[in-house]
Length: 422
Image (cartoon, rainbow, N blue to C red; front, side, top):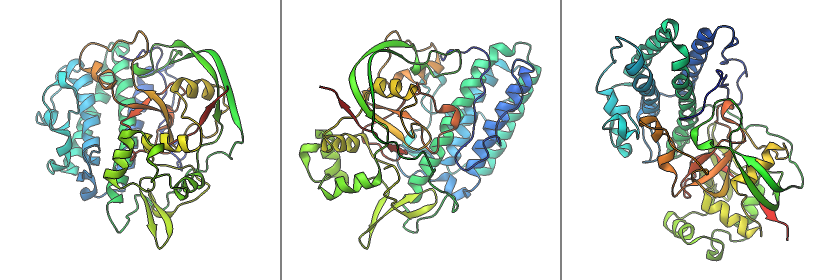
């Protein structure tokens, strides 16, 4: 279970939006009930804002087993509050529909049976409108509980992890609908006005790091359990690029035969290239000799100056080999990011590291269903650091550990390079 101290404000903005539009007001030390009511309402409203451009048909589609329908995301995060907050702590609470516990549980085995993940797109009923009613039902009950409880301090840890959990699904909502839209040859736009984030001006050179450093979450604020415990690491001298790898860099890699040279690739990576027919990053399309990419704004020309996006770990690793460099470890990335030396560390693309997603020394998952949140996935996946253009801002911190299987590239994932001093 994540560690908690005083209530922590989690910002819920995204690029192109007024940074204060969804931000809870007030000081938790002054009126904690109002603070948590505001925080709860802001996060819940942000989910609905992200879903608002989508039709009912858009919200039911599941384009691959790894993604989930928008309607399912909206219902699952609601079930989370119902299951872990309302059922145990709200006397007299009546569930909206007992069948929803089966339909919208995700992977919490301890919480009971669940619908098979690859078949979430088959849940055409209940309707999107019914899910809106479900959300309103739970929202009212949570608001009443926060307002009336005599032991708010007991509830805060559950409320806080519920809000952060919902924000994670806000990012997945965008990545999953983009994947679905990418399979439509008419190239629909989620938002016709969407623009790639401006980011920072490209930073030249490298940042040198070495020695003994502490990584992990060491502050008395919210974090997920996989960021704990903070611990020391010894780093050999290494230089991390201050800039992200760009589309121009990737086009050079492609022109040099990067996708056709098996010596650059891990064995599983090369097998994936051959099986999937990869010859460019995810969502890239070659139309009449010019490269385009599917974005939240529809099909756009590839901008050579923007960071490359939608690449898998296998591709990132092959590119690093081609460049005669390496991917950084997550400890190297975190240590360097804490110095402020990395350009676009946050808010553009997640950055692959070469670190396996594993427990930190001394990590123990919490007992019960909430202990299934992170620990059970600590095998066969790789860590990404930073945050992306779709990530709620409160999740952009140096210690945050994202993780995916090495072939995944439907996320907003890119890379920066490292090389070692000899």
